[in-house]
Length: 116
Length: 113
Image (cartoon, each protein chain N blue to C red):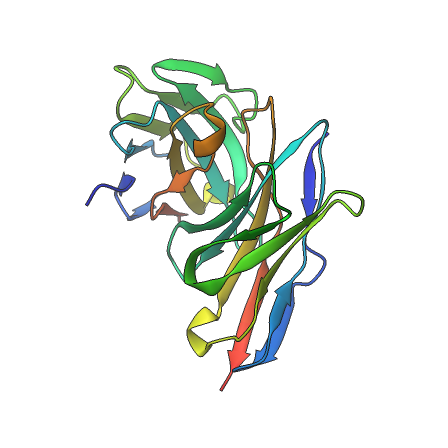
């Protein structure tokens, strides 16, 4: 499968615990995005990488959220001290970059987080 | 500011009838426009995009969309709906010089057999 891969698909955690999600983008894609989606809403932008550089992180929901893409390949999203309000689907997407003919982002299947 | 509006939360259409899912956008400069479909507990699947050129763009599974600059709209259409088209549809916009995709709140399409 050469699509965007996310792991785990589902995560149930107790409030206050830390969680980390992984995203493997399509191999030749240099842009990687993280989005959050809650029930009945569209995806909400969190952060974005161009290769290993995190170029936009102001939309991360709080300082409990952090993301890395250390070698410009896979990325991780960490949530520290989880709260019930963090329960959502976390989506990762990748795209080829700024080429006008390849502007679309391809999404993974998401990680559904439930904080109990 | 960039934004997308999908005015209908729910669209119902009979199988075999044409369908339209509406989308309007607001963006500074030239827009890149996209439609995605989401099935339950799945990620978003790309359907089609408008970058430049012909206002009518064709995409996957027989879907097409019409870009109307004066009305700032990008409605999704299909001539003949299938029951398998039932899903959640999202419109998205990205500014030409932007990095983020902005999504609408989605429209749930139900095709009735």
